[in-house]
Image (cartoon, rainbow, N blue to C red):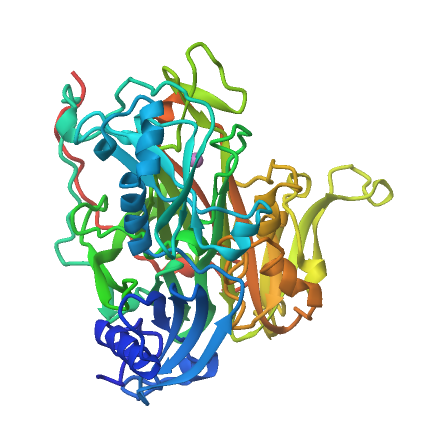
Amino acid sequence: MSTYLHPLHPLTAEEILATKKIICTENNYLDNQVRFVSITLAEPEKAIVNTYKKGEQTHRKAFVVLLNSLEAKTYEILVSLTAGRILETEYIPGVQPTMTADEQIECEQAVVNSPLFKAALLRHGITQPEMVTVDIWTAGHYGAEEESTTRLARPLCFVKFDETDNPYAHPIEGIRPVVDLNTMQVLRIEEYDVTPIPQQLGNYRADRLSNFRTDIKPLDIIQPEGPSFTVDGYEVYWQKWNFYIGFTSREGLVLNKISYNDEGNVRSILYRASLSEMVVPYGDPTKTQYKKNAFDTGEYGMGQCANSLELGCDCLGYIKYFDAVLNDSKGNPFTIKNAICMHEEDYGILWKHTDRRTGQPEVRRSRRLVVSSVSTVENYEYGFFWYLYQDGNIQFEIKLTGILSLGALEANIKPKYGNLIAPQLYAPNHQHFFNMRLDFDIDGEQNSVYELNVVQEEDELNPYFNAFYAQSTLLSPELAAQRKLNIDTARTWKIVNPNVKNVMGEPVGYKLMPGDNCVAFANEKTSWYRRAGFVKNHLWVTPFNPAEMYGAGNYPNQHKGGDGLEKWTKANRNTQNTDIVVWYTMGHTHIPRMEDYPVMPTAYIGFLLKPNGFFSQNPANDVPPSEKKEATKTSCCK
Ligand code: NI
């Protein structure tokens, strides 16, 4: 095995297999006794990564979450791949780790084959259980004893009318099996009312549609000299940017060590940027619907749900793909071929000015580098897109698409907590909250965060009543750094290095510019709200701690709540001029429309990181003008 990989190189297939073997040999585990929930790189300390020189040997370690399903116990195991042995084993009592992809498949089979379930289906008029699809949904924590003692799933069920039919068009309302995932036994079928199955088809597959529009001409992106980036393993160089791609089964796409070459000076901006947690709470109190609240990252594993883009990628131009190597629950490696896509895009005008007197226009086209991956979590798709721009901007955007989670209604009922989208088929109101972990290292590790509020000047200092200014407030310690957005003050946050000054003598910094956002509309007494403490604020700042990675804690699955950011920040630690982590929560409120069906057109949510006193002037001033090309002479107007 090579010990000369970059310290942040994700575990290779050989390393994953070696980790499994070390653990099974040292513990004498039998094959069916344990599930390997995740085998991921134990990332070395920052100091090691930051001083690493190419070709050096580093100590490779794997971090394993292991579920002993026979004993219903969870362990965290640290393995040295370099030494070929276990370094630490810790039993974590009272937790349920992320569901594995294998459990999802086995759970569906267990339900479909269950005599209890077949009997219940008959009551709903379904005589062909083989046409039923069972989407595993986590059980949450509503105060029942079993939620603390048993590894549960509470799936949602749908029925297909034929092999290629869209099952989500036909929800079986009023039926929720409860499954013990350790024994794979259906414990019971929770049954409420019997509602007729919506009959209208909701198909979207190309092979089931006809009458495609015929007025689209080809649009090709040609890069005759290839792309402007270079790649070395998972490391990327693009113009002045440099970063290292990571991928984990829980977070999916991770960007590491983002830096910008500022006139020969390589300047660090972000050490690590990742999706820390997600929650999708539903706002419908009906019995089948109210327990729906998926923590897609900690409960399902965003990386483990990633698509292989080998078969279909929506990107144009020269594409560079990266594979993701993860583990199945037996501990064997599996590769998601082309899980990550990278390409360049033209992004319109970068900057422009026309001197009216000389008539001379100066215009530069903007080019951005796109790094993305897409995950399918049962009915829904999330696309994760990082964009790097020539002017120092870093943008993150999530694309929400896929199929709504639907319910069935009796005829002539108009739902209050959702919208009808087809006859007797409705989509409950819901929200999608994303918590991002942004480990800034702006020109080094010692950073601080300021809040900027734009305020009107007081009358006695404001003779013309026109004056306003940006008020800057230091956010430290932690409890003072729990902040909500405020449209009345155009609130933004600025991350600075107080020890590095720009040419004007001010600390260098980057501004976090929020995009679409909202607050949670559920009452805070509801179960999911206690478990998803990260939604209580849009911004949190913590001192860097490598053990604090996930906004709702390490094990949100069936957790009763109060873990993660809420718990850690009670210590009220210093966040000034120290190595800090910024956590940004953004929410998308989804009041569904008919146009979101059968597959939802993409909705977008994200944020922008904008240099603010980081550079001495527009860093994209040196982008050369584009070659002038004659306009295409095809007539478009008759
Ligand atoms: Ni939605």
